[in-house]
Image (cartoon, rainbow, N blue to C red; front, side, top):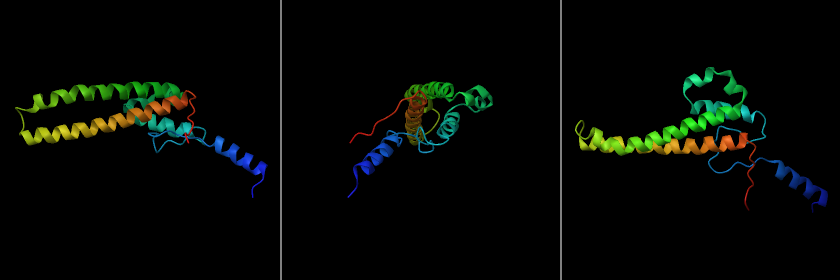
Length: 137
């Protein structure tokens, strides 16, 4: 049988353990974990154009990088939505119908990936801004 102090200690440890919501990027450590901001920075840089890496400001201030990354990924998602609507029409006279269908499948897969990255980047930005998530029982 556990003592009251043991149960309290276990509750404190449980409340100190970081919880990450569904959709949290696997390669980013939970907020509060050692070096979590380093892993968040690397993830966010991978969401951005390569030349963002040369700006020291973005490495020194992950919350600024997060804003840049979320804005960039949002634009990619919107461009994907806009482009998907025109793929069939723009390719219809250039390639066979089955190629158009395959192209639409590839576009849809890429769009789904972008939407996942969009959610991950938003969650990381929220964490960098100080948001804490609570596990629901």
